[in-house]
Image 1: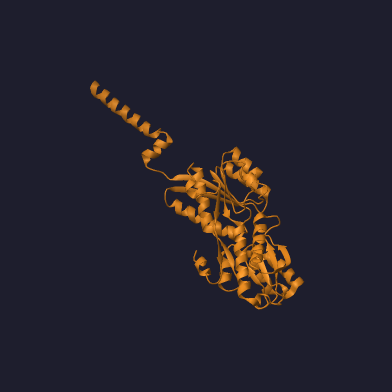
Image 2: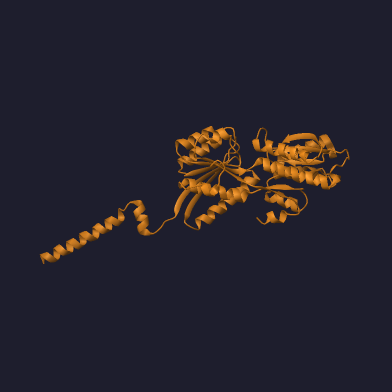
Length: 351
């Protein structure tokens, strides 16, 4: 009887030892014992504003990439905020996101010249940042080795816009309505002192001049990337110059559409309206090209940028190798731009 009791005690002791071994396995061993778990990642995204049409479409591309990954071996949580066009607010949002446990941040700066607080906060907490859409000064990108950038080449977008406008002027003498041998033009610029806005404008104008188009500048007006502000500025243009404006170069589609709104409000016919070109290839911009309202735009590849943002984020957060992405200087991803006219707009509407 005593032997049976001893045997039973040994079996029970062994059973409880094995049970405790499973319960108190280290986390990684528990996961292995239970089968592979998803790779968890929390990604914080902060936009300079919630009202930018292009950025909202690019964020839709980001969400799609993450949804696709989450159907596989990932469990990625996306935390989204916007800074209401306030850099101080964006600084606080970055700090809050880090405190909330974000593994990596995707930051669209309000002020590209004031990233110091954002970078310092991230570096102190060792949370990498992928900046996007608004490129930092190169010296600021060198402040830490865990900073990256995703965007397009502003010079390329301006050059393509200039090529589109020049081609139309060459093929259609009617653009020069007053027959003075010059194209009277106006610019709707995104922001004062904004690098991309300045480069887009300068490249569009210089490209047209290089093609032999004689230009006569009537006005440069700041409309802050906004359709409503562009409409207001264009109404003022109409008041000052009437039908003398023959061409409008807008730094983005929203401002180009605002210009169209203004001319329509003043009951201008298509013959009396200037030729108008945008940049970005937003869904409404592409639709306007398709219906003939907008003479052309430049497609800013939001799908490629959304994919790059997500790929860099998950690779960096997990300590992976970015060499396959062929980043410029190991930090920069630049997506290509594409010229869009009525002839090829259907290709982009499908995307």
